[in-house]
Every structure is written in C-alpha cells, then in structure tokens.
Length: 495
Image (cartoon, rainbow, N blue to C red; front, side):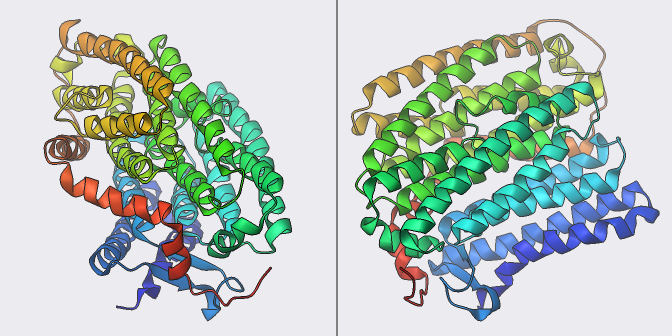
C-alpha cells in the first residue's frame, strides 16, 4: 500500500481548523460534533498507519512535493511515530467527546481551532524528519497550549498562561540557538543527514548545541528547572486540555529530545550530555513528588505526579542503552493511558461537584462510584502496584538504571515512589472511607470512556507482553540510528 495517505495526519487537523469558523452560525454543538468527527477521522488514519508500519516492519516516508531529503522536507512514520500518533489521535477523540459536557465557556469555535492545532502540533513533532520543522511544530503546539491554558478567562488561567509563555519563549530561544549551532557546523537540517555527519562535528560545539536543545525542549517535556509552568497550567486549563497535555503534548517534547540526543550519539561529548540529563531527570522526579505531597487540589496533585513520571521517562532515555530507551517508551504508553483516565475522571468530578479540592472527593465512592473506581485504578497503577500496567515499566526503568551503574538515581527514584504512595493512598482513603452523600447520575459516555481506559490499565498489567513488544520496536526506532539513516532516501548532498 502506498503510504502517502499518512500526510493526511498533518493535513486533516490543519484544514479542519480553518473550516471551524464556517460552522459558527450552526451553533456550538455543531462545532463540538465536528471536532468529534475530525478526531475520529484522524484516529482512523492513524490506525491505518499503525497497522501498515507494524505489519510490514517498514517506515512510511512522506516527501513534500516529491523532493528527496535533505533538499525536500520529509515525514518519517517509523514504529515510534506510528504508535504515538495513534495515541495522540485516540486521546484527542476521547477528549473531544468529553468537551461536549465540559466546555461551556465561549467562544467554542476558538476552542475547537486551538484543540485541532494542539493535536496537529504534537503529531508533527513526532513525525517530522527535519529539525527546523520540529521547531515549527513545537511552536504550533506551544502557542495553542498558551491560548488553551488561558481559555477559561479566570485570573489564575491568565497567570498560568503568562508563566507558560515566558518559559516557553526562553525554551524556544534555547532550542533555536542549538539548531543554529548544529546547522552552522553540518550544513543540514535533515535528521538522518545530521546523524550521518554527527561524527564530524566539533565536540564542544556539539555539546553546547545538544545542551541548548535539551534545555529548549525541557519546557514542553516538563523537565526541571523549566517546568514551573506545568502545575498552574494543568490546574487552570479546561479539563480535556489538561488530559491532552499529560497524555501526549509532553510526550512529543520527550520524543523530540530523545530523537535528537540519539541522532548525535557519534559526537565526542555525547556522554557528558547524557549525564546532565540524568541529573535533571532525577531532580524532576524528586521535586515533583515532594511538591505533590503538599497539594490539597487533586487536579494539581495529579499534575505534579505526572511531572514526576515524565522525569522517570527522561531518566530512562538518558541512560544511553537500548534497554533504557525501550523501558522509557513502555512507560510513555502506560503513563498516557493512566493520566488520560485520571484527568478525565478528576475533571468530570470537579465539573460536577464545583471544584477539584480534596474535600469534594469525600464519599466519592458512594456518590460517583464509576469515577471513584477509575481514580482508584489510576492511583494504584501510578504507585506501581503489581498487576497494573505502570508496575512493569517502572521495574524495567529501575533495572535499566542499575545496569549502567546509576545506583544513586535508582535509590532516589524508589524513595520518591514511597512519597507518591503516601499522597495517592491518602486520596483513596478520602474517596472510600470519609464523608457520605447521595448518589449522583454519572454521564454514560464519560463512564464508558473511563471504564475502557481502566480496562486497558488492568489488561496491560496482567498481559504486558504485547504492549512491551510494541514498545521495544518503537524504542529500537529511536536507538538504532543506523537503521534510521538507511531508511531515509537521502540525495547525498550537503556538508
């Protein structure tokens, strides 16, 4: 099958975003149903891409205008992109359905446009084969995220958005300077050709360029110390958008970081850049878990928990081993499922009961049993209890960390997991053993969505092998740079 239809994953959300204003006169519900239809179409195309890549074992490469790279821009749908573009589409579809109930603030048309652009930006970051277009898609993602953070038009939302804009601007500047250093040294922006020529780079220039790119992507990837925007943005953003931030926006930033780091593995100063990332990732886990322990707002608490899990994934990617990368990708998949479910359930509870303060969760097991069940499954999974999906990926990350001799990092991460257990079990105690109240009728569609996600958490926890095999193929796509270079049809021009 010709894979050029994969370009629709970029074209569909972009064109659909421009069509949204034409539906304004048909009413806000028409716009919301249009959003559901577009995300459903995106999910169908992503499923076809996933099926083709994982069946044939070959990547889909889309060349703009038929021009071969590095002259032309290309999209690269390997095992990683095929898997995560599907996750982006599925989560977007679920959150479009959730938006039917949760989004009341006008203008709905602006919300729908930004929603589609956020999905487009994350998809483009994952699929692009060009480092400058990675920057372009990163900016589309970031600008959409800034606006969506402020969408609820409260003082807190405006403040959160401003923090995000300031830190995002700093991150973008770092990233662009890093790209400029690499381009100035190698004369190319194509990722495959950068990998091909990386060994010829001056080690100092490469080290500075990589460090700048890591700090630049640290904003989107929520890595300490450039993640101060995240808890405020997660708390202030509309509930569906918070789930999208955690499930795939941050994953796109992490992937971009991992892809560029491993493309440059032949440069002389590569090891020192990895050590820097190990330290930053470990600090991210510790600081976020300690901050989560103090929170009384459940949505904010889960935001800090999400940041800690992202730190764990960054640690796995920073180990420089195949086992580390595979474990990191596995954790990305598990985390996307769990946090989409948690933010969906907590957002629905906050919307129904008037806020996400922990007092509102007293007696939730009696009042909203479906949401209480989903939150409980998510909490137990995140802590790393056996027979739930995150247990397997956490164990693999710890083992991969010990294999390369970072015992101190493994010990600190395990200690942080104890802190995580404290605040999640405190929440479960509030939900099931405190308070009382009358049962509330829960929305059927939202109930079915959280039950579907909860089922995935448990099924992967009991039968992890299939998803682990997907993660290994996706991890190899990042780690095996020689195969990446071989798959991209370069013209052989450049530096």
